[in-house]
Image (cartoon, rainbow, N blue to C red):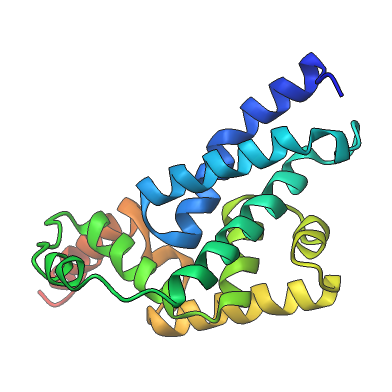
Length: 187
């Protein structure tokens, strides 16, 4: 099948979102690039199985997800690289507060069960609808909603979040104002 210009444009437009999803799954930008590349190769090779007019992004996410889990199963049988593990312990954490929060968030996200993390990334990170995420994961709509809710609840508990106002620069300014306001009130 000769690919139409629209299909080619849709493939190109999906690359940043595919990369973000791949990074969320594997946590490694270089490996994520490889996943996206493999996804695009498989999509291009199987373009005849894609029905033009349907959801290209959902089709690509499904391919990427399948590639990731196939590679994950292969890697689980491999012996771990000892030098890689030692190198990872030598990394120094970034000094900026935002980077620390992101690292904490990433660690908390990694602790989620795979199905909950995947659902949260698709709905919260990739901006897909619950219906699209359910289609990609091959489960019922209610199951995706439940997984997202459980994932959000677990993240909030793990990160000890009381409200959404605890994040971002506004939270830092609010903490400063609260301290200065409380010191004035005590005078």
